[in-house]
Length: 216
Image 1 (cartoon, helix red, strand yellow):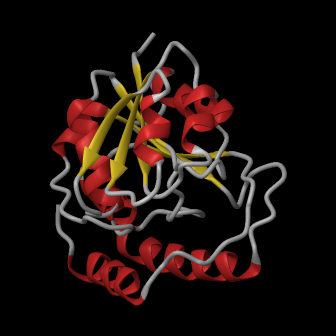
Image 2 (cartoon, helix red, strand yellow):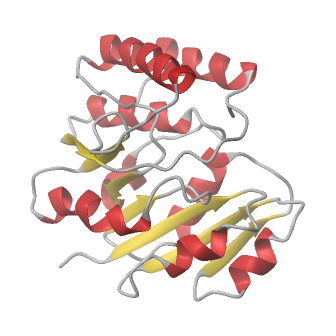
């Protein structure tokens, strides 16, 4: 059985980060990266069994993911958001194709889950971004922007990732396709809890830059 490290990028999620850690299997190494939060995220995470790393200032999700991966000791890295939209109970399903030797990278697909109720705005934006990425990588990926994914650590470490923000998820897929990694989408449940749509104009520009100009 492969060792699994769960990496949780966390920014101003003091009300949910401990619950995510608690719902991860005790068999997993769990690493929380507090990305310069201004609330009690760091303290909430410190009161769990997780290893907690911290950025003094907000440096972006991509940097938090890279910070966590550098400290991870597992054979497989699982990235999961700290807001409880993704269910830690789905991690075994996400890791299974890698453990069984069918995939190097798996994506928790929100569009294919058994109870997927993606809001219309997110569904439209996801369809556009996934369609653009499909033209670039020549692979059909239904949910390219899902933050819930697993990857072999040796494969992740070989990727020349540079994005500090949300574009890292696009960058990973471009590099995976370039290196001919096996990618599999796994249907997962998701719980939308409201709140603002988190992609800024800068995130959109970074996505376009990755799709048009990124080489791995």
